[in-house]
Image 1 (spheres, rainbow, N blue to C red):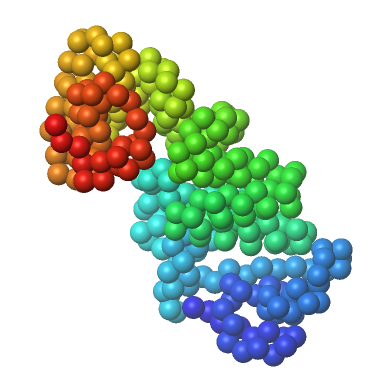
Image 2 (tube, one colour; image 1 turned 30 degrees about the horizontal axis):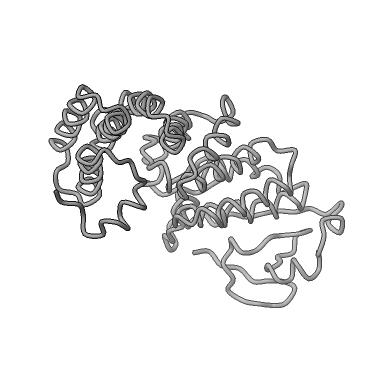
Length: 302
């Protein structure tokens, strides 16, 4: 980690990333807030933000004295660079931290509000990576309010809100947010799968089991190697069977369940999902997963 000294209060050995240079003088965060409580006081001043070349901007790992390769102006370790290039990220947690930072990177030199937005964006991503979607969303929305003219940050705030709603099982509301983002985000953000998954949940909540089945099949078409995708289709057929009593729907549900079990017959998550679908087929009752767990905390048996 690179360190520096605050030239205002004489604090020593401060992390470089926690300081900013104004008119050639280094300020710590406290001195910055004390001497420049609002952006108008920075008018006409030269603002420079130095990035520590030894700390990965994506995973925040400290590499001591080793300076890292950069993507644009941001140092990135070898593993994170591979991840970024391959774009293999889970939908919910590992968002594209580098891409977010680049939105405001060039703005440090001319407007204080961008530095403030940058701080909120950085904290927002930290919360998102720890699966604290509520705080991540609030901070990203705050960043958007500070720089409303930057459409990319506004889109990210909407995206984070959609993820937060999905994590709280509010699929219908999440679908509304994701629909706002069509043609506004690059493919890396997996918007299409998220819209389909939101439709799956929304259709189920509205008892639109035909829509549930259609969306589940669309999701399965994106990746037929996942047991959860096959089980979602089985679940939709089980709902139709519970609603209409057609033997054909029951047989299809069992068929998709069998295919899913061939992929994953061991994980607790999938065993619980299979158990709920089997209960639905046996009882012809459709209840939410949360209610199923409350009613059968140790699993359902015939």
